[in-house]
Length: 331
Image (cartoon, rainbow, N blue to C red):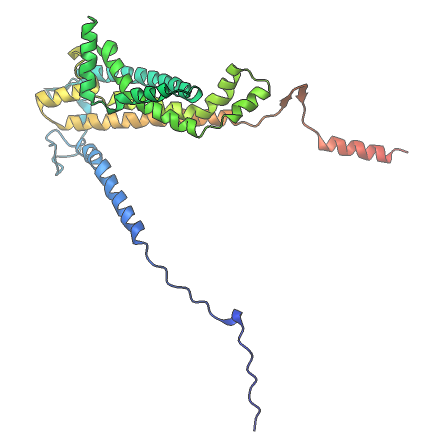
């Protein structure tokens, strides 16, 4: 009879580890679907508007796409007549220039005021009256736009000043944009470390140089955001400017509203809306590129280090090794 085979004891490493099957995360899929629907709801009308702007001369304002593909409605933004039909090109050019100038001015003023107000709150938040001032600044954010326009109109009329794009509309849009920029700067200051300023002062920098070379480079993104808020809010504003401007100084939203109320909606408005959207994206892209180039320029490697007692040159390791070898070889 043959001896029974020896059975080796079971080892833990020989056992097969069976992992539980991974369950599908339905909450992630649900949130992803909701986000896709939200994007379609947000950008779908803009995409449809851009598509319908490339219809031919007999195109309509709704689907389906009528006629052949063409640039007639885009040409109506540049030429005063297209196929013998007069267009609103001259009025659109004047309104676009007015909107551009007032938006740039409002963006710069909003960025400056929001930055200085936020610095004042950051350095001097000591009294209960500061909280009252905070809610006074936020009051323009909670006031309906048309009521703000009416109040500003009555105020300038009481002073006996005429309303225009620069006298009244600019002020109303700046008041509307300051709360947005102020909140942006407060969020920037909340993550700002004041010890970097103390370190700069300990190293001998005065207050002006500390602000220019330490504080400003660290918070420029917030100032950039304030400018974008002021620019885009003024560029798209209608209800706060409708009472302040005349036909010769209409902004682009007011010109679009006037064309819609008097002549009806045509595909040339789709072309104009697409052009203004592309222009807004172009302005943002140009500013972002300029900011990135500035950061790359400031991030170049330093060749020499300025120290307190002079300029420290780089240490040449090869020269030191050759000097040590020469002294060792000398008798």
